[in-house]
Image 1: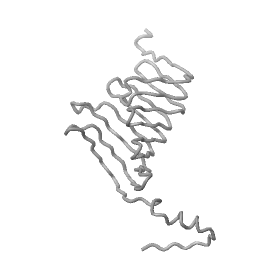
Image 2 (image 1 turned 90 degrees about the vertical axis):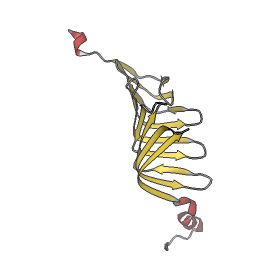
Image 3 (image 1 turned 135 degrees about the vertical axis):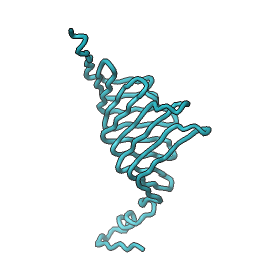
Image 4 (image 1 turned 45 degrees about the vertical axis):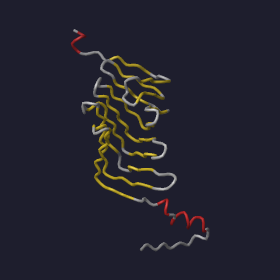
Length: 173
């Protein structure tokens, strides 16, 4: 049983503090979620904490971040996403990741870093409108927004600020 005391005169403020929708319907710690399709592993999501909210704005909140591993049809690791904070909007099938976002494409070793990213699971797209760095094998690119398919096979960086070519020491001799 919970008891709340308040000196606030506004009933709307008091009701917002005790509203059932503002409290998680479920919480879990040290989670390890496996996603499969037709018996094949598609992804694994790990997080120290999950808060699940029900209702018309159903969402899963990961206040301590996520680490997601994506696999191909042969269950080889293809892509990895890490962030310090994430929200999954269940009905819209939209994931937001914030703070120290790192996406690694293990097939071509491309690494994307940013502070905020959206993943539209219906359209199978990832995108943002904030500063983003993309490191490929031979160059580093900086831009103010990006858009890619969810596997990062086709990636566009917009409002590019810089492209830095990486030269190996052996090629300087």
